[in-house]
Length: 133
Image (cartoon, rainbow, N blue to C red; front, side, top):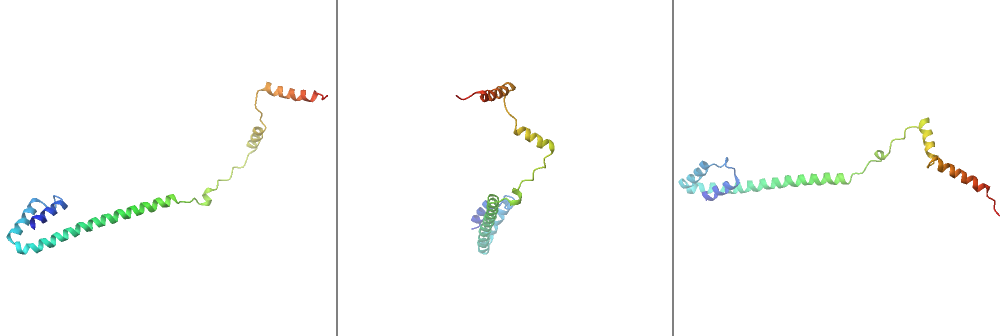
């Protein structure tokens, strides 16, 4: 019983918590007082099992809480709607005389070279001179 207890504690506890001297002391206690130490070892073994199970349950609960928080944050970000006021654009700056003039010039700007424009004007004049027979 003492040997099994020492082996199971060796797997779960760190080397600092269960040293070689502690192991030897436990086995020596079991050899000197086998009847008295049997009940103690049974209780200690069951307590260590419950402690390990409790630690695993706490870790699992912490992981689940963290995952739930992450899922909650994710759904909030994905379902986020923009407030109506934040969608509005700022009003345009009032136009100065210069910008108003430049907009008008751009509106009536024609493309092409000066020669092309003169040929177009000449054709307009030629169309008017034609008479229909």
